[in-house]
Image (cartoon, rainbow, N blue to C red; front, side):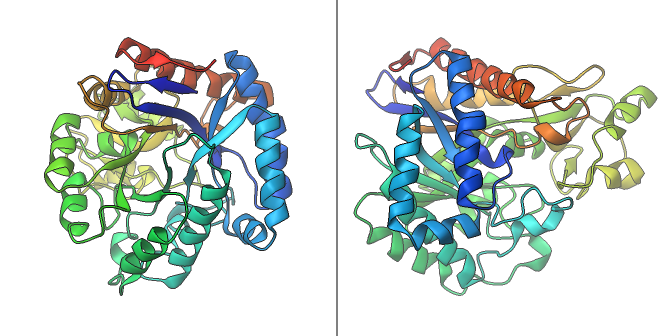
Length: 375
């Protein structure tokens, strides 16, 4: 979906396909028919944006076969789908039974991460609609904090590679709890010397909330550092207002699961690296908890839990409520649908849920004065 900001900026809204399992091109094409087009039809729009996740094997397959890229582009167009952004954070295996810390590997100390990201940028340049101003690729916030080594010049190689492309694609580092770049303050510090023409920040509002960051202050820090919000990931975290309450702890236990990491904070970090560790006593439980568990945007979890949707709403207001738009790529990224305690029972339930999230975000943008320019 597309919206026009009052300053004339064309704002793209998409949902991220890392919610779907696909480790080969056939799987990607299948998900377009199984989910992408049905979500578009459910919303009643003529064109729907996808934030594609192309795992390393898929990217390799496409890079090696230009005809396959043309086929993918044709399939997207035939189903009323478009792509201006890719999620380059997970490398592969994002739907393995246990992902946890593996999602951060390879990190930005390795040439493998650089090659993968440049391959994604090259592919995105070919998939972009003709009238798109640019593309974006979100990526790992350098790496997990305890495993990090110096990038060894990989970010310079990344920027130089991006500068050689025929169509502009920018790469956005996504601050995340527990990582080298955990907060916007760390982003401002650690990315101060990068080539800001090509590199910037992906602001994930679930992560922002788990860090107990104020949206206005966070954006102010990025502005002061000259770092653009290349991409916004519209997401909400799980919140427990009273974690000492037995009913609240029981509800939180239902969100403990084995696939993804669910970093938890009680106020500003550091916190616990996973929800089970927080419940085991790594957080005192004297103040509200926020948990890195992406929950649906349009509906709160069952009481006594809630979500950080107000942080998302405040961030959207900061980005789009003023005279100038402060980003033009918005991607709904709730990749945790299948591990929710009340996970959808079938494809139809997942399609309806994703469509409801997109509709909630669409209505927020319209309330902020953006005009929907495609249906």
